Image (cartoon, rainbow, N blue to C red):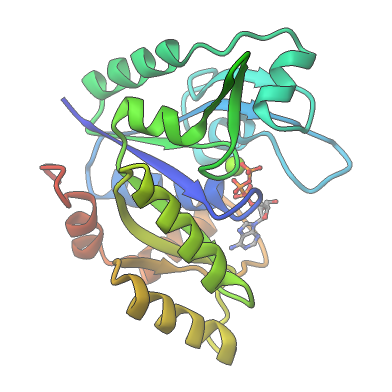
Length: 240
Ligand SMILES: Nc1ncnc2c1ncn2[C@@H]1O[C@H](COP(=O)(O)OP(=O)(O)OP(=O)(O)O)[C@@H](O)[C@H]1O
Ligand SMILES: [Mg+2]
């Protein structure tokens, strides 16, 4: 039985898909049978610079066509609202079973969330079923993607504290759009590391062009396979 890992961010459009892609490419290169799963996708606007994650995974990164998604809803709004607008019933059990099924077939399943941890997925008469509930229910250790610029300390600390409050294990952090010459970025990463003492898996720069090749190259130079192995196996008994 493989391991499933949740990829979340300190917000939406932080770089979860790019990070998931890099982890997928590096794990595959390590010979680890890896699968990407994005259970809930909302909103694809042609005029925006966002893309449908499934399209990216399947057309650019090389995942099997039609295999990475489950609930797809057109409106670019929170899943609980998108499901109401489109009359879609999100069933957490269906997601959980799919993750279990994938864990039986793969060594590592990378599950990309929609937005961050405090995102409502389903509205009930007496409250909300949130992303953090799904993570808890599926018992998914989590990797957190954060930006490195001004505001990153607050966003990262509040997300990690929220995760702890809900017994979600954060395996490590990945900083996106990291500028190695920017004093704020350098100090933010140092400060966050000192405050949280969590492994920093990678610091990814802003790329001029994003492709399978450029991400593979980036992964080679920025991610230590041994370190990734250690982080992923934190309490996971991953055999990689
Ligand atoms: N390191 C980077 N270099 C260049 N462009 C990037 C980088 N990281 C992310 N982007 C771009 O920023 C946008 C948002 O990134 P991404 O789709 O990975 O975010 P996300 O957190 O998965 O968003 P969502 O919440 O919509 O799933 C994309 O258009 C992506 O191409
Ligand atoms: Mg995404």
